Image 1 (cartoon, rainbow, N blue to C red):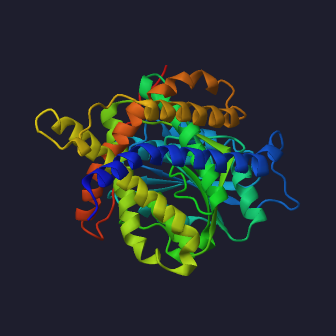
Image 2: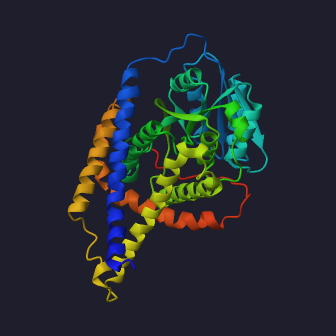
Length: 419
């Protein structure tokens, strides 16, 4: 029989060393990506031997009256020879409908579809895909600002890769007036961008960005487009495409400026939704895990399952620390302090190294991003805590959610706008 001290040692060691291992894995992958692909294209422009194909930009909207005019007028500035914009109004209760109709009258490139009932983002995207005239789709949120060259950079991958089913862009944070906003600037650069680069090297990407991504309609048609019953349609469509052997690529130069929560309650709701959606997708496609033809997705499966287990190992550690104040626990499982020991110091140094590598890469696209470096010292406290809580709440929600229920959306926390 395995001794209690052995079990507790493995559990506590895993809680410490798993994020260390993954940090160095992501750093190595991102550096390979940068030196193999990204560095060669710095300062260049996307080019093609033939005229690029026409594109449809889909913009699903729900209560976007505060942002939709700015979003669509920015889209009209795309440096791309042929594109149309389809805005899908999903039963907004504010002035979104009137604004969209007005914009459609002002600009012939804009078409509008209105839903009478809230059907959800996936249904809106499906309707937009059906209504589109073109084979290639760029999907962005109704409160995002797409960089003028983003479509060109995304389409470069489709032109050069017949098996490319989707291309995920590079979200950049607009809301930076609070501590959480500043940390998210670093998170999307030092964590999200780093991981997507590494996953591109290691084989498969966990998910396209829900706020900015390009799709090949033929690939979507093969997999049944977006699933209307999944909380996170972006994760679901990413797994569907890759399990059908389509390639997904990351394009760091396809930048899109987005609004994010700047309150703990708003951020927690968002992360619970992400965690729940990830577990739902894992459950849905778990039967593919043991198939040899799905082997390139194995690392995605394993990493996600392991990250969920790590969240619960952190919870067990905290509970044992708290129980030690009230119960006479065996010494083998007693946690004397949550303050960093040498292992915590090593983890902190690793985090700062990870942030430095990523910001060095991302500074090619955003000149003043280094000023957020030292805000990132709060990342482990602010975000690991929130993400652990999100997984603990999101897992049972995913298990208990009624299958086949349409996933409608509610207007999210979009942060504190700077004047």
